[in-house]
Amino acid sequence: MKEDRTVQAIQLLNLVSKMNFFTSLKSEQQNDSVTSHLKIASYNELNLTISSLLRTCIQTLKNDPSETDIDIINLLEIALQLLPTDEMELLDELHKIL
Image (tube, rainbow, N blue to C red; front, side):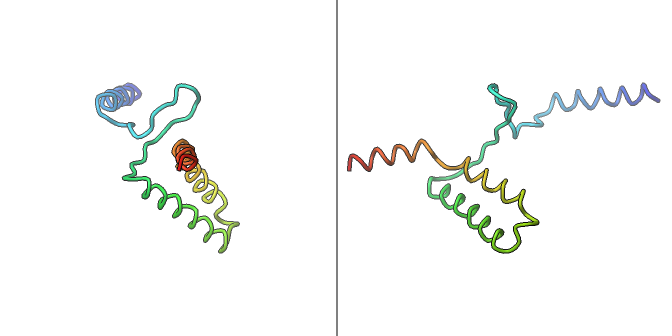
């Protein structure tokens, strides 16, 4: 019985290794985190997405923050990661030139 389970486990591992599973997250070499890609069509869409995340957090905090603290934290962390910092620095430089 134990050998049957071992054989099944090996077959499952072989199947998984041959297929293209677990491709959504990419390991980071520098630390123990992973990255995930988000497809955005334009900077305008990125801005609208971040705005939606922030408005959702605001509305939730206005209603009942005690039950949704971790969700708000997660949404705010996502919004923070989505901010295009390098592009904002470029816009500052372009604004100085104009």
